[in-house]
Length: 239
Picture 1 (cartoon, helix red, strand yellow):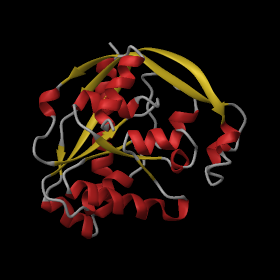
Picture 2 (cartoon, one colour):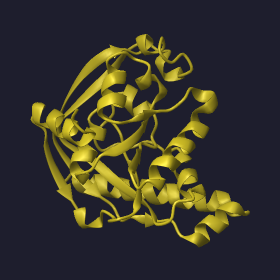
Picture 3 (cartoon, helix red, strand yellow):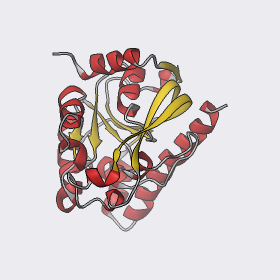
Picture 4 (cartoon, rainbow, N blue to C red):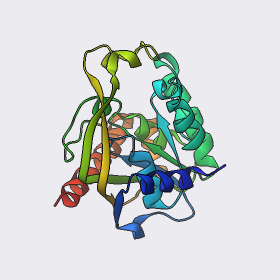
């Protein structure tokens, strides 16, 4: 059976996607890494794996673990771990990600959530970040943890439609974004730039702040750092 990295490279070759990688010297070596990136396409996970030349265990939406065929590709071949339904989602994410980071596997998150995947968006646009990844990093018991922001800048793409959104509500009725008319977009990259940001190392003093009254402040700082770093790289990659 092929590894997630081999599957990713095969998929990109099959789609004739060209990747341009920048600032690869910023990739941390011999450390636990939490990859944070913008998200518009089903190709984002394979693109990041190919760019980093490493398997990455991505947290993905609950419905991706429920839909036949998609489930086999996402979880079986690409090694992603679907989140639980809403009630246990955050707890499940923290538990699974901690285990992976402790074994120095790369873990990937898309903090924009589901919305940019179900709406047609411009290549240079980026939504607000959910803060779950910051909480994960700051409460982590993993030494030498780096949060690595990465921008995926589409240079040339093809936009089509995949399935009706209401069909996906059969697999995850708890997701309000599926309770609307229209189709799930399908963005296929022809040429894409992957720009690697400066790693944000989690220090002991930040973890101490997270345990105290400054917890909200340190979470906001990490979230905003990654958002602004990716936003800046996205503008740079779009030139």
